[in-house]
Length: 144
Image 1 (cartoon, rainbow, N blue to C red):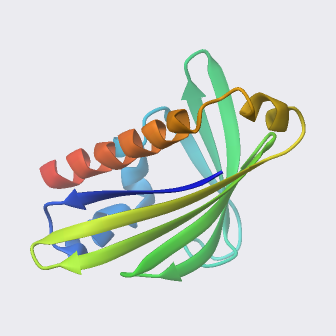
Image 2 (image 1 turned 180 degrees about the vertical axis):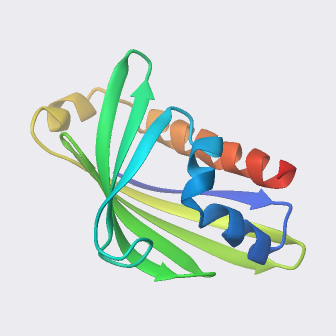
Image 3 (image 1 turned 180 degrees about the horizontal axis):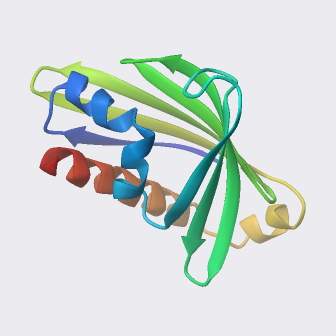
């Protein structure tokens, strides 16, 4: 399942990237993030792996982020792997003067039992969560 979402952030791209590209800021805008732990590679660079632990309702979910592309301020892309799910996320940041257009392209691939469950989960559920996360970052960034 692949989809694209975008949001306009009322800040110049330079400031958006400064806030986005900070592990210290993750917990300020990623709801449910409990911890992040560097696993391997040079932090923040292609090939680097980070373990992320989230609390989602009554369930804890662990995923591993692998950075694919770091071409900031234009693009930051990564692969996110959790039990039964592989997600490639491409973030593009477009300079529009005093604002920044953030475009997120997400490609979910399901395997194992998640492949069966995904047949019963509406795609709109994933888009809604992505939109919420992007709006959470926008709110954080604009108030920072």
